[in-house]
Image (cartoon, rainbow, N blue to C red; front, side, top):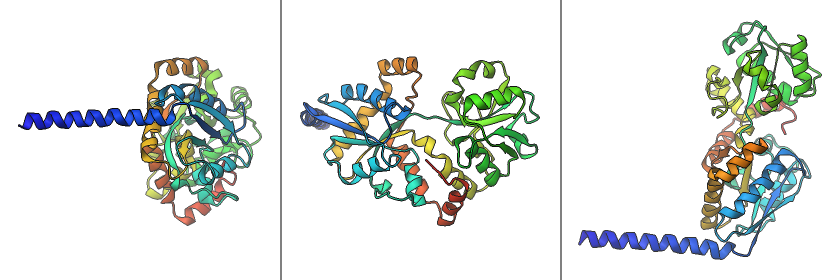
Amino acid sequence: MQIHKLAAALLICGTASSAWGQADADFYKGKQVRLIIGHPVGGDSDVGARFLAKYLQKQVPGHPTVIVQNMPQAATIAAANFVYSQAPRDGTVMGSFSRNFVSQALIGQPNITAEPRHFIWLGAFSFPSRVCVNWHTAPVKSPEDLFAQELIVAGGGTGSSLSIIPTVLNHVLGTKFRIVPGYKGINDAALAIQRGEVQGVCMSYGQFTNYEQLIREGKLKILLHAEESSPPEIPDVPSIYKFAKTHEQRQLMRFIFSGVEFGRPYVFPPGVPQDRVDTMRQALIRVAKDPDMLAESEKLKLDMTYRSSSHLERLVEYLYQTPPDMIETVKKLVPNLQ
């Protein structure tokens, strides 16, 4: 008797699963899914979205056509607001915007009407870890040395990507970076390091692609990365969070640095039926495992590291736990969080 009950239960589950898949296919078959991108054509986020669209339409039941629409006004805020308040809530419109959008909303950036906690976070791709590197002749040899000895690093203007990490670490942890402003990017910084003008730089790990030989030779040493999660390319490099002594220190760094962990995020507007949310989340997971996608992204040097919907939801909740006085500190440290 028990065996018959078990068999019946399995049959019911199998039938339900099949029916669900058929319902998903029936809904999306012959439809268009619009992917609203808040970035201009040609940038990393635009390229990543178009690459995703190519593989996503193969993984969604019914194989809808996925088209990318750019809406770059107001530094991605227009796209976020549109998806939140005007896009259809039936699973045919997705959105992507600045990885710092949640922090921008909490800071009170003008014109943001979308509420990040009410978006349906589907998943993300890309994990562009930020690192600090030094030249092999510098007196600083390890992250621990940064608390005792000065490291002269190339910086940009106030709030520039070159200056954010050393500025924040000096303020929050008491490191001894000395920032020399005026450098425009990795090429300027790398040349300055090799000339002896500065001893290191902090920036996205991906920007060191043309300098991998110097890293392999040990002339450029990666001291640390600025994320809590370990980047897959450099799993043995220590996280700066290792040196945080208080919850407040971690919370402040998380607020500023967590944008990288959002990667290129993808969302539905509020109110999309749960079965279509589940369908799209599973489709993104299948894209992340697609061997053809992985091979092509490797060939193109396009970061398609997957970030789960639950990971993004946790990040949002962490950020909303940030005290108001800490947010005021962030405004002073990083006035142009983009």
